[in-house]
Length: 627
View 1 (cartoon, rainbow, N blue to C red):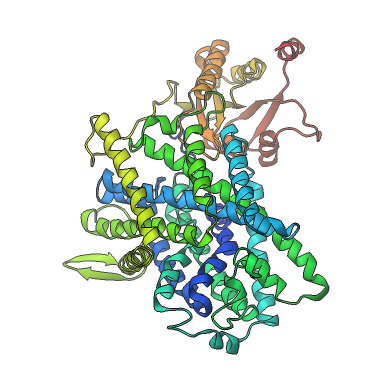
View 2 (view 1 turned 180 degrees about the vertical axis):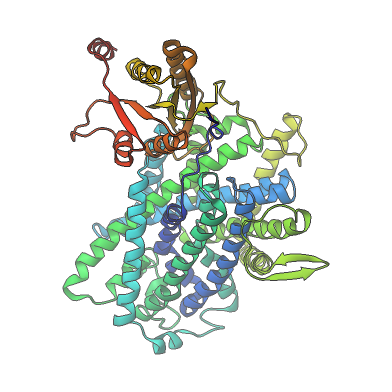
């Protein structure tokens, strides 16, 4: 009988281009709710032009990430590219820049949540209530992430689609009701309003509108057919975001034109403007008649919800990045320590949440925007240089995706998008540093603290600054060979039900078949999919060992890790892969709604073969109740 060997534990590739797009757009799309105001403060009437220029640089950056991520489909983004192109020191610098981006994303998203809720209570949009409320948002989400409450992937997709459709509707309505090319031309007084320096600073600040490209890269290890799905997901995000930013700023400046060097889009709430809630400003100045108030309430609620989720995504990004950096021995192990009960990286979550709160205290959104630009331009520039360098140093490595355009330099073909993008982001980094000394000071201190921490830790570990040493997670000691046409017994979690194994063994004995036990461990979103979870792994191994006690040599087993809600799909895929003659699953207790768990519902809907649901014996149920 043929045999089948399952893939490596912990790397389940299930995400398609649609899932990658919706997740990334959920992060990128949130920035529209504050980026308009931030850029208008600097660029005034040239705000639409700034977003177009920043969008072109972002398109080059996205192409660079597509090539690099399909070459090395692993989490890390610019840090991973730098590791392969240069060494571990440069990988740390890129990762530390990413860390700054995540912290500012947390702070700036939380800061704007109360401003949009100000549609119900205006005081929330003013200082100091906005600062206090923003800190409260971070504190609540930090607690949620430490506890490890599951995130609804389906809800995220629904909100991302709703957000995109709402933004499209605003663009269409704005083009019909308020758009005016003549007003846009009158808005421009280049040299005075804005000055050349302010215009140049606005371009890197405008890149805050395109946050989230690292999201797709960090999900690369979970993407199926990554050579196609990753480029498609990135292309879809670029197209959708660029379409919004090509028109919405023009609509905003038509509705709130520049007058004597001032526009409501760039004024604070205290000054009667909408810099702190620019999308609400567009709605309020579109004159929708009877729909005015309902539209304001809808946009306020949607924006606050999206920004709340963006804050959470930033915290998840911080925790994932900290865990990844710990694996490569870039940060002390204490920072990536898991909570003894909740199995979440609570030290990293609490530490960086406090830093985010500290950056929020001044209540200066423009400063947060320039600091974000510093970290983003640093990471993006390293990514561009790394991908171009890999064309020279590693031409033999397979590149499932190559973008259009090459430059031949000394016999090497360099990607045009990496060269152009690298020049653009590099100049933007120089501009934002040179023209804003406070940003240069804070950014330099951030880099200096990070490098000092890195050097001290590596020296203490007896490691060189440039060598790569990854902590290797141990593989489970289980028999991994699975016979085709086995009886598959699936457990969603570490709770063992012996009756399911006995039933499977009886079925297998009739046709002299084998029994394979699959135990699934759910990994929360704020951890990498291959994160070490000793308690859960030990419980899963105990389930497999207990099954072998009952079935003897007939039983094999292994465990795998899945994201919340992914257990049912994984069971179906496993059953089809081994051509299982039957799938046996224990029946969980009925939910309040009267149905079974999502895992069983998915398996029953897909029907990979005969599905047998086993209830525990009465005596066993009594024991479970007593426990």
